[in-house]
Length: 102
Image (cartoon, rainbow, N blue to C red; front, side):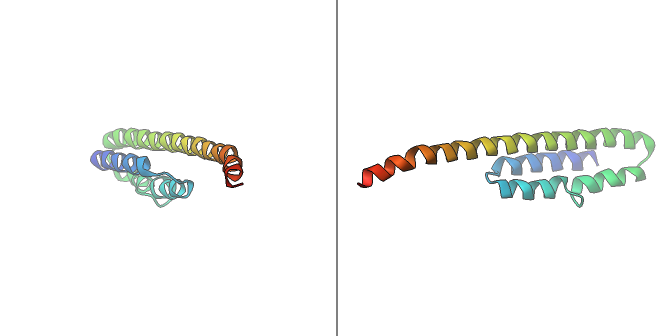
């Protein structure tokens, strides 16, 4: 189970690095943190493990979830900043382009 968590985290973070649109970010969130995600399934299956393994796997699963949530928040912040920059550039340069056509 620990290996599954490690692989899941690596795959999720790799895919998050490729996200460049808010819609893609929401799809990523649902895939990795949604109610039917592999991570949630792993968390639910912890009850089936022996106590000692449950503690270790539970701690790792919670750490993975926190890391993914933190990465999601950071990516959302970066996408919002990028969008504001794009909007600002448009407001600044579009009037200038209009003057060039005259």
